[in-house]
Amino acid sequence: MKSIFRQRDIRAVGRFQSRGDACIRLNEVIPAQRWGIPEGVDADAPDGTFVGVKNGWYPGDEGWRVNSAAVVLSPDPRTGYAIAVMTDAQPSMGYGVQTIEQVAGEIDRSLRTP
Picture 1 (cartoon, rainbow, N blue to C red):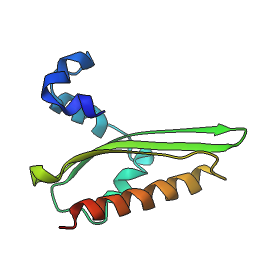
Picture 2: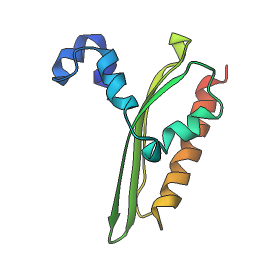
Picture 3: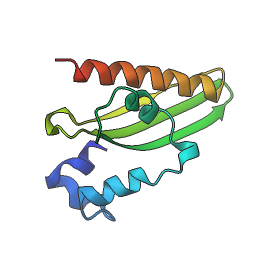
């Protein structure tokens, strides 16, 4: 994901012609699947913060694999970042989602604290 948002690498992504195109795709997630990092970040984010997300999950034999990757763009350009939280062997999808939201919230707060 990081390479999508670096200007010099943007053409290598293929179907994306600009950072804006990539953000549009990351923002097209239906509300029912907009969990994970956006929920962890949105609680404390300043107005105007954009969180584009791509989530994934899989019920494996050893437990659920629940993952969330996002780009967080703030009105202050110095505070934007890309983040991925990946879990394994979760007892349920809901438990994995809660874990991701808590981790994302902690990381977001630590990055925004001067």
